[in-house]
Structures are given as C-alpha cells and as structure tokens.
Image (cartoon, rainbow, N blue to C red; front, side, top):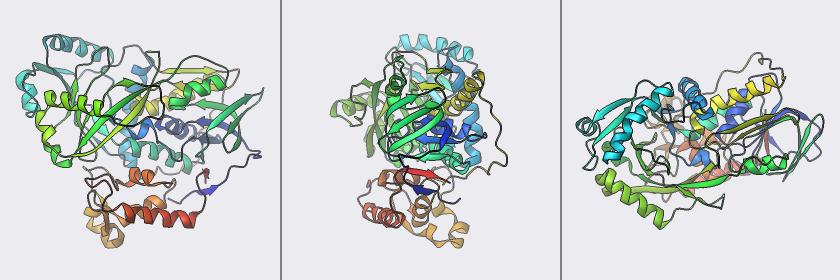
Length: 481
C-alpha cells in the first residue's frame, strides 16, 4: 500500500472531474468508494483536515439491523441493505465487528406493552429474529442490570463496529482506485453552467460535471448554494461516558431503552475497543461545532446509568465526549437528484448513516443512472486494502509473535494503555491517507485513547507525528495517486 502524493490544488486547475463529492464523512467516503469502481474521475472535497472528523468520529458505532426504522421509509430500505453490504465488506478489509446482539429492556408497564409492537415493526422491516423475553431471561442475559426490569426484546444481530476504520477503509480503497482527496477546503460558492459546476473553496476552484452533496451538518448550506432550500440541519448533540476496560465484564450485549418520541434514549454498550459506553444525551443546539460535554449532560447520564446498571458507575471513567447528529425537520433521509443541474443531495443522514453508508453509495449510482449517466465498471480494480487491526477482539500486532519476529517495531510499545506499537504508528504515518494531526493518528491506531489519555505517551506520539510531517511538507490540501 503506497502512500499518496500530496500537492496544492491550484486555483487555476483545468481538470474537470466527472463527479465531485462534497463531504468526507463516512457517507461521502462510501459514495466516493462506490463511484471509483466505475470508469469515472472522482474527487472528494472536505472542509476539515481529515476524513471522518465530525459525526463519523463520535457516535455509538452500532451496526444496525434496522429493526426499529419506520417501515416503508428510504432509511429503512437503505439501513437493511447497508447492514448486508457492510457485514460482508468488513471482514474482507479488516474493519472490526462484534455481533454482540442487543436487548431492549422495559422498566415500566407502558414500555412492556410497547415491546410486541416493536417486534411487529421489526417484522415489517424484514427482520424476523426479534424475540420477546421475560424478566427472568433478561437477567440471565444481563445479570448486572439494575432491579425492576419487566421484560425485553432480543435483537441477536445488532453489532458493534469501528466507525473510524470503516470511513478510512472506504477512502483508502477509493484513493487506490484513483480518487483525488482535497482536505481543508471549505466550499464557499457553486456556479452551475450548462455543462459543469465550478466549486469555489477556501483554497481555489474545482470543476465537476456532477456534484454530490454529502456535507453532513453543512448539507443544507450546500443545498442553498446550489439554489435550493429544502431542509435545515439542526445539530443534535449526544454526550457519552466511556468506562474503563475493566467494566467490560459487566455487559454482554448492547442494552437499549424502549424508544420514545424523544428518540432512542440512553444505552449501555460495549465498544469494539473493549470499553463500555453510556449515552447518548439528545439535545438540539444551534452551534454546529459544539462538541463539548456539560455537567448537566453527564449528570443526566449518571442518573440514567444508576437505573440501568448501577454497578457500572463504580467503574473508572476513561473519557467523556460528545457527537453531533445532523437532524432535520424531516423524518427520513433527505435524498434527491436534480438532473438539470447534475446534482445529488444526500442530507439528513442521522445515527443510522454508518450502517446505511454503502447502500447510500449504491443508491446515488442508481439515481444517476436514471438521469442518463453511463456507468462502466473500471477494469482491473486493485485488491481491497487490509486495514490496521485495532479491535480488541482481534489479534493485535503486539500479540502477534510471528509479525514481531519479522518486524520488531511491532513489539516496541509506545502507548502502554492501548498497547500501540511504533510499527503501527509508522504504518499510519506512511499510509495511503496519513493523519495530519494527533487526533487523526489517535483514530487510526488507538494511541492516547486509554486510561492516561496521553499523559504518559503523548509527547512521544506527537514527536513521531511532527517528525514525519516535517519530512513530508505541506500535505493538508490534496491527495491523489
């Protein structure tokens, strides 16, 4: 896997891309991956300095069956299809997935009465394996739950996944197929002519025959720049608490609340990295960049945790964080095509966007086909990449004696909390899409994610990053093979 060549995107660049995808979250990366499977020139424009740097990096990271989606909705169809696609794709490229199953727990008579309706809803969504269980079975499955559970609904195929690795796998494969990645380039204007659209960014201009708007929290802004006004993004903040790995013994599956009109509520879930997560809150805010945690939010989560699993609150907290979901006034994904302006809108993609991502890529291609775009499968596609092993349930490099015997750098630990080696950090810094900052390196390796949160290893990890960046020069603009 050879690294990309980085260069500055000139404002006088004359190349006209067949398709430009605006937005480098997991949905935009999935769309770019799908498009680069065809004989098209494709670019990905992202306002931030890394892909997957907003909603895609801070979420509950659950691979959903779609059992509780609204039957007949676009979201329901794409989540179901996306679950199938991502479940098949993940093991081929090394995305960590654990099929833990989920258990919806009813704590009140009203919630208990809702469970059969949820089971019926699951069947309408094509999911036949939902199973009603009594209180005794609930506690057999999750013995550390707090007292008072009345029954549950088991969803055996819900899974936990690594959202960071998913986005990185998509864009890595797309780059190896010829994608041009333009980072740190916020779109400020769009000028549509009869044959192409000029996209003005903070670093120059890009020209495209077709534009795909997958800009997440900025999708409504891009839609208005294209001359439409179909929805407004309202950021919905979700705060979460991450408990130490020693808490993992307490939780066997994803413990879900019975959803209400206010949302899906607070869950307790294992993570792919071996921790346990409590959250999220759900608060509509105005600031589209506010990912701060608050005393009120964390206090609310603690009160919910005391009801769901009181022993969990006795465990050490490793981290707290907040993510933003791009909610809108619509109850479904906001996906549409405008043939006259050669423009596809992919907006309002909420918490199920991770699961639906590959299906959204397929859907965009089908919409463009209906508009008359000819798609020809690219010949001699490169073999899919194998992503770094960062899941707790898989063999990590520090455990692989054969790997270490071939390259001792994998046995030289830098981050002792997460057992991250110099070899892994080196690989990330030399990868197809290397990190440009410490947070990007954290997402690729798990370094600084452990109990000390970088107190012990932070200086060394940052030094390795700075050393590589000094040799690489300015690479925060454009990547392409």
